[in-house]
Image 1 (cartoon, rainbow, N blue to C red):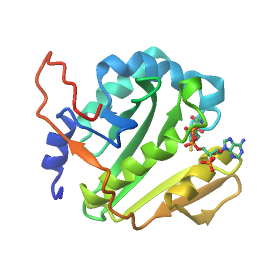
Image 2: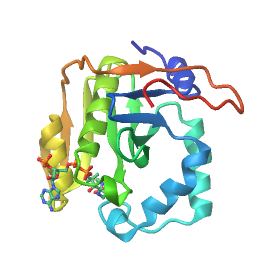
Image 3: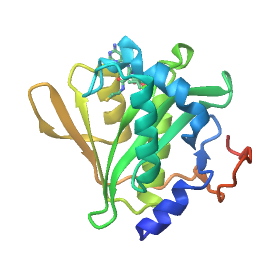
Length: 202
Ligand SMILES: CC(C)(COP(=O)(O)OP(=O)(O)OC[C@H]1O[C@@H](n2cnc3c(N)ncnc32)[C@H](O)[C@@H]1OP(=O)(O)O)[C@@H](O)C(=O)NCCC(=O)NCCS
């Protein structure tokens, strides 16, 4: 169980990855930035984000620099392992508060068209929830979603989120408990410069 921000920082500097055999979450690296930039700026993706403006490459790089300094912010690349065998999206847990045992879920996108509608975002969300509740010791995860984003609202309900607040355009959803998954394989290795690591799960 993670009990300090120093431990979180070490985790973020490691080659952290975990998966369920068909989908794997791998901590975002500099090599993924071009892909996430392209996905994030697509009209059909950014329209569903609270901040839906297009971003410049310079803004993306500035975000990356700041992100690396934040020990309580984890962005994962979602990799499909069986058919496509490539990165297909991203998901994130951030604003991790170890005192309140809370965190925010977000930045979810499946950017690879061929990966849509196959349950990949649902699997990725389940993996992230399992890691957050059972490795980080988080007791409440919350998110915001636009009400008319039906695929997202549906998958959040399927993963156990419930509506905490019903606003004009948004739902604030949260989850307070997640059952431990037997399929979970978590791994984390100390980061080494220039080392290419391939985990057993990715
Ligand atoms: C939301 C998103 C991540 C879903 O990814 P995905 O891998 O295709 O999702 P899944 O296949 O795991 O599940 C989506 C669910 O929505 C359902 N769905 C898909 N299109 C739908 C629609 N138009 N209306 C209602 N439900 C729909 C699917 O059938 C599935 O439900 P099911 O498992 O009961 O069949 C993807 O559409 C995306 O990247 N959207 C743009 C970015 C975004 O909206 N991010 C979330 C911001 S809160």
